[in-house]
Amino acid sequence: MWTFLSGYVLSLSLIVAIGAQNAFVLRQGLMRRHVLAVCIFCGVSDAVLILCGVAGVGTLADRAPWFEPAMRYGGAVFLFWYGWKNARSAWVGGSALNVEDVPDVGLWRTLATLAAITYLNPHVYLDTVVLVGAISAQYEHRYIFGLGGALGSITFFFALGYGARLLAPWFRTPKAWQILDAIIAITMWTIAISLLLY
Image 1: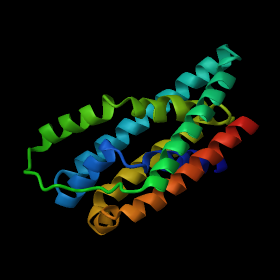
Image 2: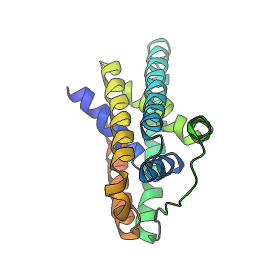
Image 3: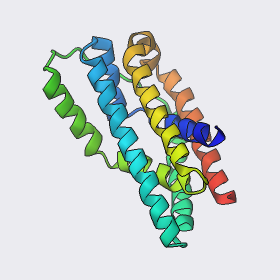
Image 4: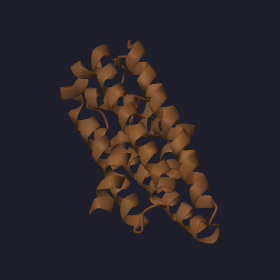
């Protein structure tokens, strides 16, 4: 259960940062257009990438003893950088999410746009395949960790898509993004330190 929850919390902390994919899901949720399809697409995409990372890193870690520490230290460096980026954003402030009213472009065009936002973004691979995969290597039951991560992503996208109308005023407030960025920074640094102390 602890392994599952660790994966779940890590996935949530990585995905909650403002980005193109989250902004797209939020906008669709606010407009109440294709919300179910958008949430399923994002959740399944993340789940597949996370499980690929867990499987790939696990296989390499078994065959190459040097690979797991390299990925662990590399992941720690990335997390420190990721935390610093969010800490800087929290300090500077000024970020807010403006949802624009756009015409309905149809389901298939919506999913095609979402596919481009998802799979052409290198951070998606860093967060899911590389980072979550590397962190999973420290757990004996890495697939349980990956399953927790996958469920964390699915939970987030459905909460964001369907809770968008309730969250919209908060997401438009720069001060709220400063608080959120500060929480993300602390979370990332905590995980990075735990990787170095493992």
